[in-house]
Amino acid sequence: MSASEGTPKGTGRRAIVVVIDACGVGALPDAARYGDEGTNTLAHLARAVGGLRLPTLQRLGLGSILELEGVAPARDPAIHGRLAPLGPGKDSITGHWELMGVVTERELPTYPEGFPPELIERLEAAMGRALICNRPYNGIAAIDEFGAEHLRTGALIVYTSQDSVLQLAAHVQCMSESELYEACTAARAVMRGGEGVGRVIARPFRGAEGAFERTHGRRDFTLTPPARSYLQELVDSGAEVHAVGKVADLFAGVGISRSHPGATNATALQSTEELLDELDEGFVFVNLIETDQRFGHRKDLAGFARALSEIDAALATWLGRLRSDDLLVVTADHGVDPAQPGSDHTREYAPLLALTGEMARRLLHGARLDGRRHDGPLADVGASVLSWLTGRDARELPGESFLG
Image (cartoon, rainbow, N blue to C red; front, side):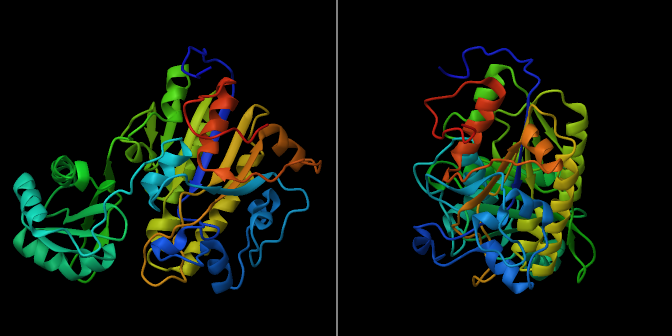
C-alpha cells in the first residue's frame, strides 16, 4: 500500500535526517570511472590531521563503519553502515535526491572545459549581461581573479566544476542579490534538456578588491526532480516536511512544507534545535553545508575537522532531547577527498548512523543499544523515514526501511 493513500497525521512521531555534506567513507565500486579510485574522505582527513575527536559519532558507531584514526569502533553501536547511490553522479543534488528515492537514469551534463560559445551567447541574451571567466574554477579564486573586471565592466562571472553546475557570481554593489537571482532564473530557463545542469548557483560577494568575500546569499536553482520522492509521499500522507539549509533548493521546493535558514552550519544547527523544541511531529531534513562548501573544496583540513567536532557536540545535546517516538539519522551525500588532486566531489559511499529516541535513552543510561549493521542504497533513508512516520511503504519507490 502506498503511503499516499490517506494516512492521517497526528502520530506524534518525528524524524530528523542530518546530511553532513561531502563526508564520504570510501570509494564506490565504479569510482575509477570518475577518476576517484581509492578515495575516502573521512579516512584521509583523519590521517592528515592526526586523528579526529568525535566522541558522540564514535559512540554511535562511526568507527565501526570504517577504520578511522582517532575514532575507535563502538562496542555497542547504533544502526550503522554504508549507503550507495543506485544511479550515476557525485553531486549534492543527486545525493539528496537518492536519499529520498529519486534516481536519475542518466548523468547530468558537465562542462569540464567551460561552456561552449553558442551556449554562452544564449545565456548572455537571456540575462542581458556579458559573461567572463567561463572555465572550471574554485569559486573563491574566480572571484579574486575576475572580481575587478566584473566591477569595471558589469559582466557576470560564470564558472563551473567537474560537477553539473553553472555558477554566477556578482558583487552586491554591481548587482543586488535579487537581481542576481533573476539572472539565475533566466539562466535556468536556458539550461534545460540535454544542457540541463543540475544546479544554477547564485554566488553574491562583497568587499574591496583583494578582500572579496562571499555573502550568505547563495541560492541553488535546481532541476525539478524527475520522479516522485519520499518527500511527496510524506506530504501527501499529511506529514509536514521541514527543510533546513539548501535542501529546499535541491528539490526545487517539491515536497517541502517549510524551509528554514541554514547558510552556515551554526545557522542550520540553530534552526534544527528550534525545530526540536517546537515540533510535535513531522520530518526535519537538514543539510550542513560547510564541510563541503567552506572546508572540503578549499582543502582546509583543520577547518573540516573543527566543523565535524562542532557537529558532534551538537549531536550530543540532541540525544538528550529526543523523545521516544523520534528517529535520528546522520548521513552524507558524496565525498570531497582531500587527498585527491583538484577540489571536486568524489564518488564515495555515505555513512549511515541511526537510532530511535528509545535507543538514545538507553545509550544515555548505559544500557545496550542492540544496533546492527545495515548496508544498502541511499534510498533506504527515505524509506525508513516514511515507515517511521506513517507505518507504510511506497513500493513504487526504491529503498527499504532499515528499522526492521
